[in-house]
Image (cartoon, rainbow, N blue to C red; front, top):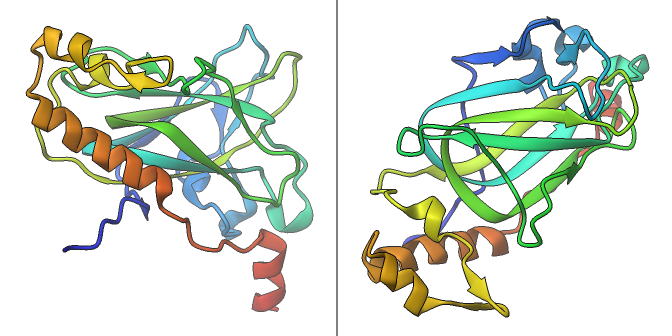
Length: 220
């Protein structure tokens, strides 16, 4: 039986763009756990619940996304900016619109960082299929933020018609098979394949990740 691996870093550096009014090249935001240029993606405007800035990663093709990682601007110990919370939006051709990710409880605000050097790994309880992903820093009060990000998942080359509508449908914690089948969007066999990918991805153990200051000490 082949080994299932849906926890690999997803390459999306060929087309990374920020929203308007951002400082630094967006490519430095993908240098998580690295100190090249000492930078990160930093929106010019302070972030608040009323201000939306984003970093968009174009994956070129559909991927099943399972984990995210975020880090602040460590800047070889000189950085002071990080995002305490963030949202994730995703897009794929069959959707034709941006969807805000929500966990199984309906929460869309994800926990970010509490300092500039620790990497925060976020398991996506409900893995989603996307070809483009946006990271949107969030704060209840105005604050300056910087972010470095990384996406993990695996290529998805199967028919995804109706997946978003079917994913995560439960009644009292049990999948509502009758309701799902009533949509006739995709065969149940395909639905089960999607669920299997999501379940295995959720159970996958991420590799041990060292902190930026540990990497700095090793390089000295």
